[in-house]
Image (cartoon, rainbow, N blue to C red; front, side, top):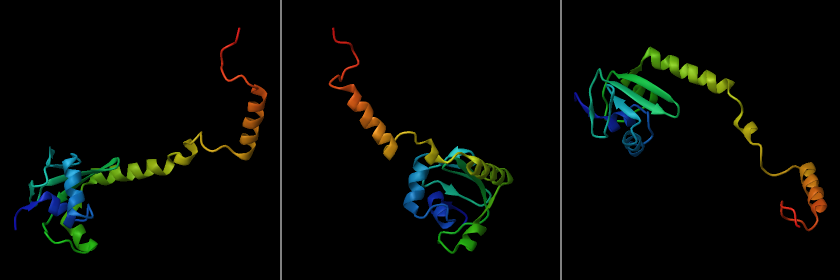
Length: 137
């Protein structure tokens, strides 16, 4: 076997859990072979460069071997070799995520606290029957 479908190879190399997921990601344009956007039936051969974009990180790997069978992780890792630039970019992205602000702290609105609820109730009692911001004349 000197060539293999890219969706099958990505599945065998454990980039995606199922071939269907691999096909969907390829269809969305998140996989490139030798700098060109791939289609699921595109064949890959040993020596090709495959770029897989997941979340905010692009992994660039060189195909070392082909396998149409999904095996254990240590065997799957022998099918490819990640480039030095790709490793560096992944480490940088991991470091940025580590130092990024906690997403939950960005939530400014939501259910009020007990104190906030009391302040709202007190403010509403002070408004009386007036419900409009305009002045009645």
